[in-house]
Amino acid sequence: QVQIEARERVEEAMLASEHRYHVLAEAIPQLVWTALPDGTCDYASSQWEKFTGLPAKEATGERWTQLLHPDDRQRVVLAWSQAVASGSAPDFDARIRGRDGSYRWFKVRAVPLRDPAGRVVKWFGTCTDITVLVEAREAFARSQQELEGLVQQRTAEVERLKNKLQEENVYLRQKTRVDFSHDRIVGQSQAIRNVLAHVEQVAPTDSTVLLLGETGTGKELLAESIHELSSRRGHT
Image: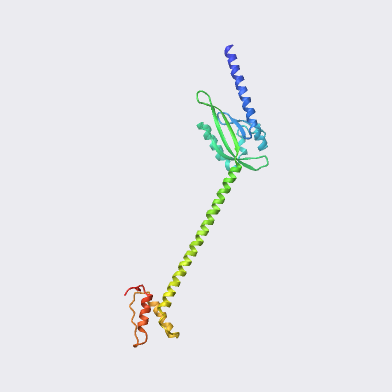
C-alpha cells in the first residue's frame, strides 16, 4: 500500500510538472516541442499551428520534417539524428514553411532530460525566428562583395592610368631627348630628316657608327646627337 501511494504521488508530481511545462510552452513566442528518447516528436505547442497552419498534433512523429525547406531537410534530419545518437544538445539553423507558403529562418535548439543513470528520457526543444538576423547577415555579405568588386575595379583603373602615365612619361622623355639632341642641327629638308631618322635608329644600339662626309658638313653634331640618344650618354 505504501509503494502504491508513493508511485501515485510521483505520477501526480509528474503530471503537475508536465502541466506547468505546457502552460509555459504555450505562453512563449517560440515554437516549442518535445521528443521521445529516440528523437520522435511527441508534442508541439500551439505556436506551431499559428505559424505553419498545421495542427500541432499533426507535427508529431516525423511529419514535422515536411515543413522544412527542401534544401535544408536532409541536413537537418542528419543533424538531429546525430544529436539523438550522441545525446548531445543540437544547435542549427533551418527554414520552416509558414501557413502562407513562405519560409522563415529559425534557430533550432534542444536539451536532453536525463534520469539518474544518465539515460535520455526526454528532449525539450525550441525554434526561434531569426529571419531578420539572417537577412541582415546576407545583406551585409552582398554589400561586402559589391564593395570588394568596386575596389577591384578602381584598383584596375588606377593601375591602367598608372601604366598609361608611365608610357606617356617615357614617350615625353624620349621626345625631349631627341629634340634636345637635334636642337643644334638646323634644317627642314627631306635629306636632313632622313639623316636624323637614321640617327634615332642606330643610337640605341651597340653598333659602331661611321660618319663620312667632308669637313664642315656637321659630322661632329651628328656624333653628339647619337651619343645623347645612346645608353652611353653621361659617359665620356
